[in-house]
Length: 219
Image 1 (cartoon, rainbow, N blue to C red):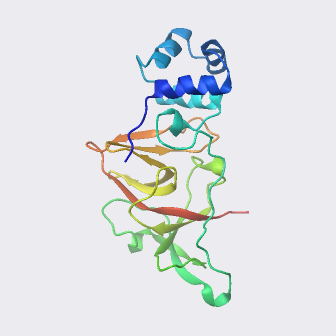
Image 2 (cartoon, rainbow, N blue to C red):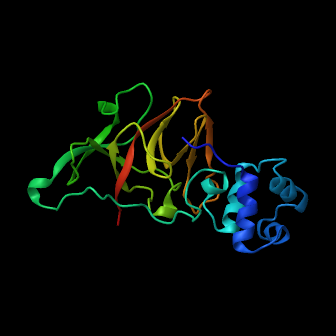
Image 3 (cartoon, rainbow, N blue to C red):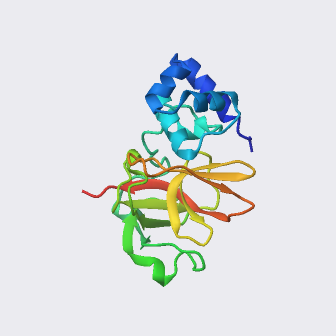
C-alpha cells in the first residue's frame, strides 16, 4: 500500500497547477500568511478545517491534498454499479433495510433490521440496504432518508464510498482512504461542519462492512 506524500508538496503542486500565489490562497481561505508559509514549507500540517478550506480554494480533492494516492479532482458524484444485471421480475430478491449498525451485534441482528426492500443486484454477493442519517454525504447526492445498497465486503479501494464501523460507535458512510497506519473517512458535504476523520490504526479499530454500490433516492 502506498504511503502518502506530504501535504506541503500537494499545496505547492496545487498552487502551481492553479497558477495562484500563497497570497492569493491566503485571501481565498482567510488563513494568515505566516501559517500558510509554514504549511507550504512543511513545518506544520494544517488542521482538518483548514485542510478543507485550502482544498476548496484550490478546487482539489481533500484526500489528494492530504497526500493520498487518489485523483486530484474533487469528488462530485458517486459511481453507480457496473455489475447490475438486466431488470426483470425474476431477477429481484429481498434484502434487509438496516436502521443502525452498532458494534457487538451481528450485522443482520434483529435489532438492526427495520424492514426489507428488493434489489436486482446479485453476482453471488450479499447485500443490505441502509437508511442514511444526516447530510455528511449530500454533495454526492446521498441525502438524509435515502436508501443506499451496500455489497457486504471487508475491504474497499481508496476513494470508494463505504459503510464503516469505527471502534464501538455506530456505522458511518464516508469515502474511505487508507495507509499502513491510518484510516481517513472523508465526508462529501455542502455543510462545513463535516470534516475529515483521521484514525490511527494502533489506537482505533476500523472495520469495513461493505461498499456502497447504489443509491435509491427519496422523492
